[in-house]
Image (cartoon, helix red, strand yellow):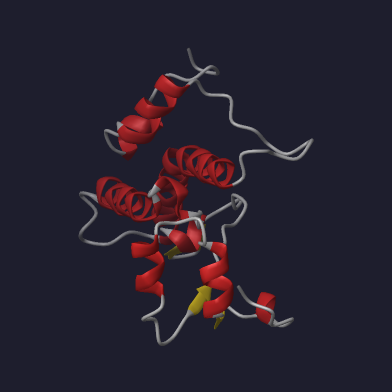
Length: 170
């Protein structure tokens, strides 16, 4: 839908109505007739990032897409930002009078340990859902569908997650 050779360098580029109609030519006519009323067509890149090795430095912690941007295929972007916010509140509870840099670093490390694995796996699932065929050597997700549903949809907070049973502590 875009012939601009520099489009890969821009977050947003102009789309082409003819190409869009061709792309969706097998859709019902009532759908494509709506497209014909478009005055401006924008193409936005969808990007994610590989898991970061840390989300914090000093007194600053990244959360949400800044820490773990993911493709929208799971609808989890905002949910993960909310879970990050819950973790900040849960781990900083009781420290309203202030913290030393060392205390902040320790709290940030607990937040990171409680959130990193979950957010990283949801990133991987989102990436996998966008690309059903993964390249050889690429990380793949091995969770069964029922386990994934529980993992993806049932979250009881960062502190519970930090102390959950895992293969290494079971």
